[in-house]
Image (cartoon, rainbow, N blue to C red; front, side, top):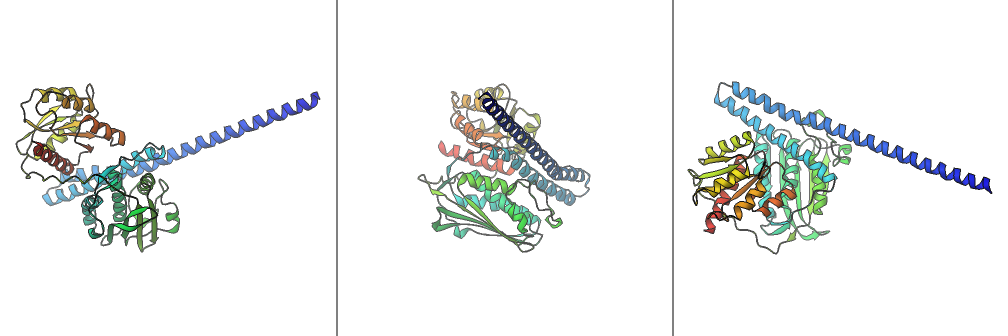
Length: 414
């Protein structure tokens, strides 16, 4: 009896030790896998970020040495292209961990899919022009209507697909971008996005791993940079939005990517587009810039001064609050507010301005600037009282467009 009990005890102990050993091996394998993924991430990101960064550095040096305006212009255009690529890579790299961890969420709003489509066409047209690519679009299939979706992710999906098509289409090629409403809907999805190109196409092996992070086309003719995240980011966002994506492609024949999305009809009407003021309507007006970083302050100042504005600077939210509180009514046409500042940050400063007794407190446009355009950050900024949120690095054209629009809205309130 004692022998049987001893054998049972030994067996149980052996099984426990075996289980612990297996758990240890599994944990070690998982740790090694995570280290390998991290190493691959760093290696890919380091290589691909350096490519456009080297372009910015090199073309800047060439532009400084150029002896003709034409050459300077050519180098500046190249710098702009490298910067756009670098910005896109950084955004993709920052978004991947949030998708993997499930921390990315939707911010549904009433939006116009036609407007989002038109904005993407406007953004990618210069990229197509640089490669002499014919960009085809047809607005007739997309209605101007109010639907509910996350407008930023909706636009990001179209933008990533369009820029990808342009990247992998040789000079002189064609990219066709269209969005259409399907009636009746298919499997609950009533909007379709189609991006078609006659570029280098994809092999069957590449198509099987198309949405795997860091998986890239290794063919020499691909001839482009990237960390292999664009389509994996698209897939992650579509999963959040309840959408689907399919790919048809042949090597050297081109690719067609089709996205189907469920967009519900909104119960709220679309906001009327505010008539923008004349191009020089802001000239001579004053604007307050609250920004703690000296370089960012100087860049914002130069952009705004070039548009004819008088610029006052504040190194933190407290100084900005004092500046607006002591100003005459109507002195400032708007406020640019960095959200991350020492002492009093942009969230706190905006709340204090909105709750203050200054005649402009409620109506003055406050445009938030942030390097972290995440859902929680954006939501908190709007709840604090900002009118718009813009991402850094500052896009001068976007900044002035939003500034004009918000100033026009404020003027119509009076």
